[in-house]
Picture 1 (cartoon, helix red, strand yellow):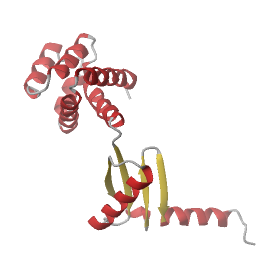
Picture 2: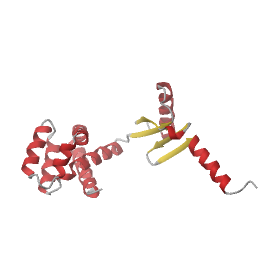
Picture 3: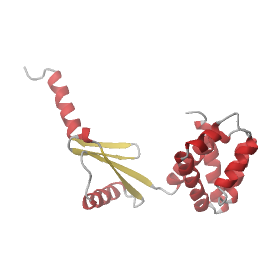
Picture 4: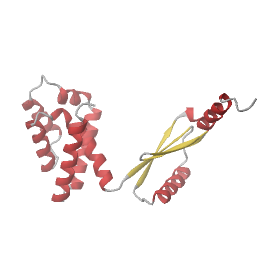
Length: 182
């Protein structure tokens, strides 16, 4: 990924600045808006990364599209323009959201199952994950993947618990291939 380190540094610096200024929530909303808008609009993404389009044109487009953003976010965009890093705007926004979630101790747990979960099951899984992690700021994202066959795969941060039937079948297959049963 081009510019990952630079985007991360800009995001960390912006988070630090907004914490000092007390504008973290507002800038977080701006960064979500920028990231979601650029992600949804391939034309805007192409405009930002294009070396052919002049910086003044990019600035005019961004001013119109993001007219309601706060002053710290506008200063970030100006700084990125001055440093020739405007193509990193979406990555900076994405990294800022991640840094903000770490700062606020927000996490997302992802549960993958073969069939959609009922709302009662989602609530039960969420409560269990919150109690296991001692973190009330966890949200649950549910994914459906038929290759799981049965059971579930739960991922919270860097930790993954695989209780899927596909995983267990794979482990059994490995044991049979080891020729332990002659």
